[in-house]
Image (cartoon, rainbow, N blue to C red; front, side, top):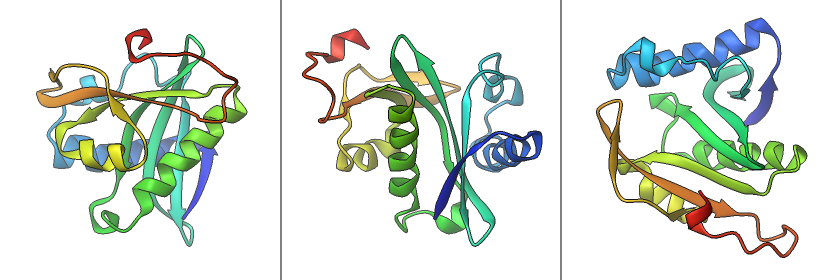
Length: 153
């Protein structure tokens, strides 16, 4: 899977179309919750297989940390390793923006996936858009001797 930063209007529309299918159509998230004021300034990512877009996500750079949001893989492509590739691409793009701390609000069913790639739970469960979540974080082990803790997130 090839992952790129969506920069053109067409690429961003492609990322939004994937989010529509996963979050609005599949999970029933209301469009007014799915899209917010942060979309305009976020870094949008698209993952494609042979020029077919199958994944999307957004990154918000907040207080020298990467807030990873809207991670979506189209249903036919799940459980095939593409989520892991997408997350590693997100981390790499974040690092190119001088960020080595990553955090996200994971849907409860996705917690084991994120744990397998190094994310740790750092909150109690909560509901967002009617779906149970926890906040998870990861610190790049190659970052410069920082002592960041989960409480900073």
